[in-house]
Image (cartoon, rainbow, N blue to C red; front, side, top):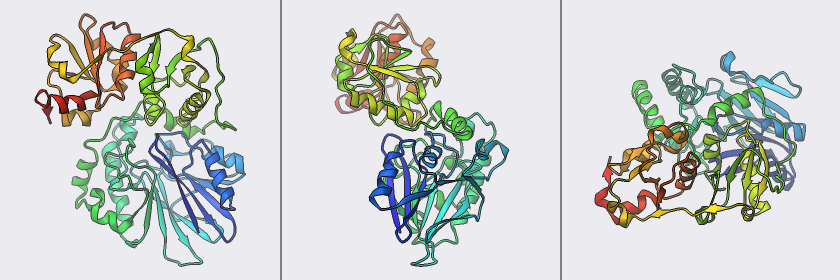
Length: 455
């Protein structure tokens, strides 16, 4: 048996290739649209991908299951659990098999038994893997967004992200009951989750790529919860804000993601079409902001903020320092279904303005300034500047009318990674006296801790 983990740091997302060395067959679980990584691994392991599946209709990225099945001719297995609202609209296409609780997917000498594990979503399934030449005892459980390292899937996304009112508490109670299905499984069972630390699909995900059921029974708050009511209260509190694009991902993944055939390769252009998105590094952006652009640097958080701030039907032109940088950004945007990149432009072709930094040592001297905190709700609850106004970055474009245009605005986040994005949004909206707090609230905590309120 061969198990290979693929982890995308930018999405905090895990997918898996499971192969039978004896027969050369393999299945891929929860693939991204960037399918070349699975094809390359299968070839390196002398495997052929004969099956593709996914744990549920994802909200945080665009599924690559349809893309990979089309490229390989593999059978695509999709959940047939949940009510009519959570059925795949393209399930009647050739090469698709619908599965329910108890169904067994065979991959050579391996079997993956389907477990219906609702709560995060109604149709969610997990896969119990057994390597029959070795043992009839299950070896691994691929849990998707059901169980994570140190956490469990959040049951509030259908209501908070997809606007299905009244589903949060019911989902939480369903999730508690789903966790009881693990009671009869052995402590030695390996748990392979669908996400790691940094994902918005939970609030306290661990960073380990794999765990055991026994370890989670001793350490995971969700499995330790003694009563259904206490579990419901805990799982619904303190969850991070779901990005706006989660609702669009649900729709696209349900209807069927468009098959690309290849990753996007934007061409260099001299005239921007649609929104201008600056994907250069933070350091490069701080040296010069380009008029009319939104700064969303390529890196771990490009998909998060692009999903919050960009429209799915409006073309974008990238500002990039190289073809490689443009390709990486376009690839990352495609993983959340933003197939709207019309090209990229080199910064030499544009005029720019400099950012204005304010350092923590001088912060108390800026009387009359309007301090804008663009961090998340949970970050704000831990520490904040007493006179600051809190608008999380993802909501800033909707709440610009709450900001003054006759005062200096000092914008800050935790350590400076989000402020160029906020700065560019404000500048594009006509605010003229803007500066960023260099290195964010972290710098204030270090240099002037007396200015910070805790809790």
